[in-house]
Length: 231
Image (cartoon, rainbow, N blue to C red):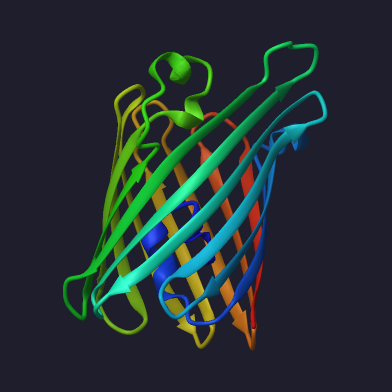
């Protein structure tokens, strides 16, 4: 998936054709909390490369993140990726704006025909006290597993550890209800902010459309939509 650029970077190694994608997320029905992203991934002979641009917020407060990612396969069953990220935060009438840099790495191992495992380290470089004002740069360790029950149905589990905000264990499932249409659902069990999510992905020739919704325990629904084109 092209958004492996900002998730598990190793997934970018499995892209076989150039892909361009746009993504929009609206949090809790508040337009000032929306995120807009665009990404491009291109496979090369030695490595696959990708770049993503993300904008969150509005004119008086916004966050911009730029990711440049490289990934490759090592044999048929192992892939690794690395992402170089730049983060910029702007606040109206605030004299000191932040520009930070960091690294993210990802690994994927296809243990068998039915089992795929992944590991993702977010923000390798520690920033001492930065986490107090820029939580996006907390270091996090993520591991996950996908089990394919058959060609149409798979189960997923993920554990994430963040030294500053605790841990979460997430579960999901995907079901290809008909050709080119996949239904997805999952639950995040974070102790302070659990939520339930569901959505779908539809492939039509070279176009992929995805839409998802998630519900926080106390806040309104959040929505997201994605359009991708495979060349």
